[in-house]
Image 1 (cartoon, helix red, strand yellow):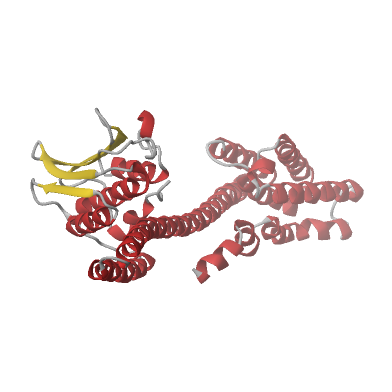
Image 2: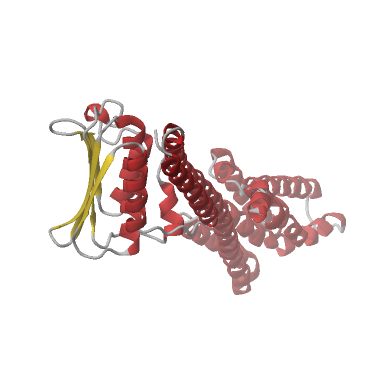
Length: 398
């Protein structure tokens, strides 16, 4: 986490400034023009003031193109392309007029071209620059001028390759930062929702059992004591589950959730009826169905006003398992009542989680009365990852 905060505090622009090539990386190559510059003062250049003006123009255009070539928007701007074309014209004019050391401006033109042009335009543009350099050089120095053409072409391609690789590395750094940021956000979401689900259910049970203990305290002390013992057990179990949720490794069984559901329903004065049949289930499928039981029973205790709640787990076609939670209450207080399937935030989160695992979840009023929650999953739910990642992704009770 500390590493991530440091990483998030270091932007991609920082990486670009500190580690990636920029316009300054191309400036030292201007030293290749020192020979032409010295010719101006040694009297070896006819009309030296024209040569000096051409040298100043070349350097200015080269610097302009270099610094605009490291950001995609400026690199692809019309002004940059025009400046590169003018740089080519000035290079050809100086090389044709003076030859000798002035031919070394062609490799510099290649550097600027490699920086400013990317695939797929790079190949034809680089070929044109290389042929142009070869033609002018051969005109002055014969076939020995082909060395300039080769150096120009190499400088163009190598510069483009290095800068393209640098850009790819920068993009990978950006992607890595984004993945790290999303991983932490997902873990925070998992933890907050898991903790809310746990506390929502546990506190509902504690409240119901406390009310039962208060009612029984005056006339049935042993029964009240039993309720208090249950409250203590539920509290201890909640502490254990919260610790496991913090580490992300909470793994409950469907049997445990069914037992807790029976206890919570009885404490609320609701008659529980639990039936289970069908093939054995893998732990991931049991964990998902356990969350459905937890969510549905919490809603029954909180909202239904029911006298009876039936929980049925049965095989469906041999390859799927179906869980149905039915109560005989009014249904109007339930999340999702009125035909709005999965309307509660808890039921909505469960719907998303079961859909990811290849299952379905429906919730709504029963055919006659009450409220019905039905979950169906493959016996070996597809697409499930470790419980420490997925179990806590559901939304809390509405």
